[in-house]
Length: 377
Image 1 (cartoon, rainbow, N blue to C red):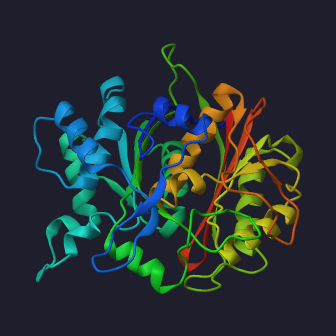
Image 2: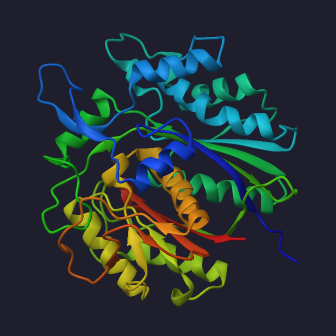
């Protein structure tokens, strides 16, 4: 009999709050973290979703004695602390960190490469603080990293490498990231509008998220979500552009649903990637239609959080599970008029719904695509 793997706890730190409940309440009310911010000196402001640094530092000071951490490290520590306090760390506990750029901000005005910029060092620093006994695992595969980290934890537990796992994901808004996306002319002129006819680009966001994954259940859990299936496929199309036929995402969804042993009609809700770029949203629409998922309620969280890079997949999975817990689907913010060639059932306003099966997808640079199927138990 196949071992069953569950997510039984989670937390997040975002511009909408420093815990899951405050995030959920703000989302239910339609609040967004996206606003104009001055990120690059001597450059116009960008629409982005950024955590208030003063509030972050105050929150961290109230929870930690040692203050010798970067801004991103503080975000990671705050998101993970409540989980570590509730679940025991043993010699068979995995620690998995998902990020795309890590402490990239440390490179600014540096003649030499700082040790903290290495992702392995970042992961080890967080692991050491909480006393993890196993070697940290880093997942850094562009914007599918957060979803893939869930899959890595699940598959390593299934393989008998670990009994449980703490997965954290995070990235912060930096001059480096903003400049990179701006060079692609991919940043929107206003708040992003996923799947909308008038979409013109992304908003960069920042967040950290953490989940606890285990094969051993106990009676203290408030909820449990089974990880039924997962897949990651690279379409090898372009360094920054997705396959126009949605091949990689289609294959990822098909593989994940095959492993989950469910058919399209059983999916109750899709938490899509939805970056609000011209080609990504069109590709997703094609892939979902190829999988006959065009009638399933779907949203993108990018209008609330912006694109949080390596944190997006994990954060949006958490919000999806909250939707299932509270029987409420959150609207896809800023969507007004269909702007893709294939039909999609985009959620235009908050709506009550019983959600048992969730499909979470993500796509990213280099042609990477990932999907995971979750079941509320």
